Length: 485
Ligand SMILES: Cc1cc2nc3c(=O)[nH]c(=O)nc-3n(C[C@H](O)[C@H](O)[C@H](O)COP(=O)(O)OP(=O)(O)OC[C@H]3O[C@@H](n4cnc5c(N)ncnc54)[C@H](O)[C@@H]3O)c2cc1C
Image (cartoon, rainbow, N blue to C red; front, side, top):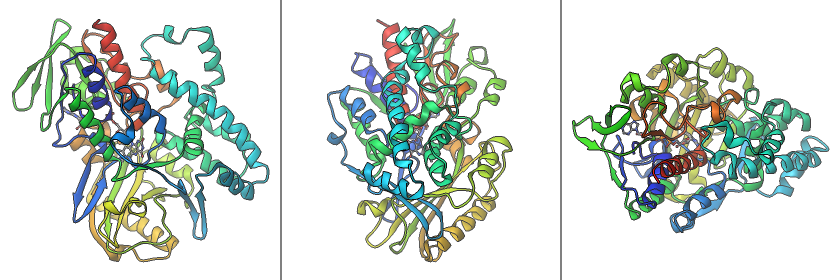
């Protein structure tokens, strides 16, 4: 196994309980991949994911091993779930309680509560079929989707309509539309190019809630590592794979950058797909051409700031979406005419609002994220320019000085994603879930020319995000088990 991210850990543990002897090779000195953490000056920063959605997927994962998430971490449901900042004195807190949420919508657009019920009824159906069935299919053959019941379901799943037009059938208010379109940003696209199937994300958001594992998102990784090791997975850190040695269409050995060679019967690569396909195998065994990869719609990269603030902040919740600028020009800068955006939307996470463990007393842990097009030129000057830009806005909108209280600061962007994870074009979240990159149209989880080389993670099925990565590991493990029994 290559890569100790969510997908690699999931695949490894599923194989281990099926009597495979599994060694997991990780290039970095700690597990988690994009969900690593670091500590400095008493602050604990989650490096990547911060939204814990779809708690049932985590329950499902641990239940495969006779466990529960709470065996490893304590979960807190956030209330408000998050805050949407449309401008100064124009802030919408999203209550965890559904009736309160409806009341809030009704204040913005009379009739929206009834519309929400209809919208959510469809979204719930999509969630149940999508998350509990469709995403668990390996998507290697059309026949997997050929049963009559499923064809009927697929039609109800709204695959051929965009989220953007779907949402507008229910709501008129620009504020509500932006709110309903926000969750698809997690899928690496915009409401215009993401199928309405993914209103299932609204069900996850509104009905299932936003949760937080005490100690931070990395606690999930800690739990998964403990479980993997309990089941017999051997994890080697600082073990960067340089080549998968293939003979006559079969992967035989894995060579590390140290020169060490490890004999193998099956390889599952949880590292970025493009890196494996283009750099770890002899080009004659690549699954896809460089042109194919270049044409994929990647999910965005990000510019991130991890900040330690030497005082308590006001007017900020745990999750804060700064929607005080229009989305369209920012989306254009990510997808259509890639460039550094003129006036980006951004996200601020302050986990210390909920959890005193992630910052010293009377201080705040502040994570700022600006989504960016992949493959942009990344420089210190640009990072600083955007730091000042979003700090100006945040200070003005929340009515307080923040910059002058920064006691710790680290930035992270495209070049770091490339250096740390071999991320193709410096992507943060893998491949976007556009219609043309769904199910069978995603890079395949198996190599077509190498009989025992499989792929998992956010660039193959089912897609980006923590829950899909967990499922990806499960799906690939099932395929390996099926082919080897
Ligand atoms: C900034 C950010 C915010 C996010 N926010 C959220 C969120 O709030 N909620 C959510 O659900 N999802 C979120 N995501 C997405 C989610 O974190 C990812 O989809 C998920 O973690 C991907 O897991 P993975 O196992 O596919 O890949 P990775 O985590 O990238 O794991 C791949 C592993 O392979 C290793 N590797 C690479 N090359 C080699 C090699 N040659 N040899 C050995 N090892 C190698 C890497 O070091 C890495 O550990 C976010 C992602 C980012 C980056």
